Image 1 (cartoon, rainbow, N blue to C red):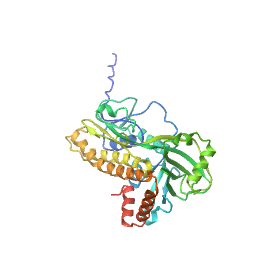
Image 2 (cartoon, helix red, strand yellow; image 1 turned 30 degrees about the horizontal axis):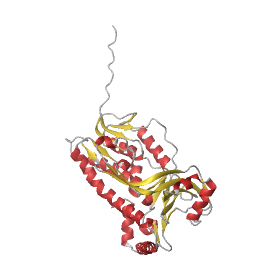
Image 3 (spheres, one colour; image 1 turned 30 degrees about the vertical axis):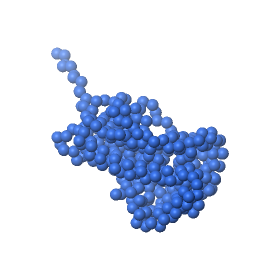
Image 4 (cartoon, one colour; image 1 turned 120 degrees about the vertical axis):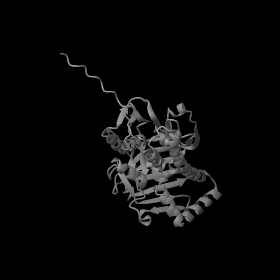
Length: 374
C-alpha cells in the first residue's frame, strides 16, 4: 500500500506585522514575542550600510535592552560620567553622575553594535518570523523611520518643520582620552557634540555637528585633515589633535509629528511617528519608550480585545504623545534660542545657562527626565 500523502502544515496567522527592522522595530518585535504574540518582522533585502552614528541611551533604554539581552559590551556602550555644555562666553552647564547619585548619566552606544545584538536576539526568538514583504496581521506597526513609505497609506499626515541645519556625523580619534565626558558647544548657530566611545578609557568620540545648512556642503567636501582642523578649532582643542576615522554622513534636521499615531489595526512608533532635533540626544530613547509602552498596553489588554482594537491602541497614543510633545517643545525651544544672533540674545543665553547650572532641584529634575526616570 502506498503511504498516505503528507499534508503541508498551515502557517499560523500573524498577530502583529512590524514594518521596519531598525532598532525600534526589532526591540518591539522582541517585546511583543514575550507577550506570546506571533510577530512578522519586515526586513530590507539590501544589506545595511556601514553606520558611523552613535546613540546616547538613557537608563530606561539601557534597562529595556538589557532585559532583551541586546545590550552591547562596555567597549561599544561607553558610560557618560560627566556632561559639559558650553554656550556663549562663560555660559555653561555641567552634569555629573556622582552628584546625581547614578553610575552614569547616559551610555553612548554604537549603532551597528545595537543592530547586531538585536538581530541576534531576534534570530533566536521562535515567535518572530522574518519577512521580505508585509503580510496580513491583526495589527500592523510602522517602524520605518521618518521617511516611511507606509505611513501615508493609513491616511496619516506627517507635519514637518525643517530646521535650517544639517547634522554631520563621523568618528574621531583624539590625542587625549575623553575621560567619560560628553561635550557640547553652542556657537554661531551651530551645535557641536563629542560623544565618548571605545569604553571608559577610550580616546575616540562620535561627532554630531549640527551646522547651518549653507555651511554643510563645504564642510563635507573638505579634505580629512582640513575637516579635522575645523573641528579642533570649534572644540577649542578640548581633546587635543583629532583625526577623522572613517566617512562622514549628513542628513537634514527636522521637527515632525504624525497627525495620528494609530487607527483600526495599525500604529506608528519611533521616527515614523515623531522626530526632533538631536541636540538633547533623545530621539532613540523616545522610540524605545514607544516600543515599551505599546508592549505594556498589549500586556494589560482585556482578553476579549484584539491586538488591533482601536480603543486599545488609543491608550498607547495618549500615553506617548504627551511626553514626546514635551521633549519636542523643549528641544525646539533650545534650538530656536541658540539660533538667534546678536548681543541681547547672547546675554540671555549666558544668564539662563548660569542660572540653570545653579538651580539645584530643577537641574536634578531635568536630569531625571532625560534619564527616563519620571
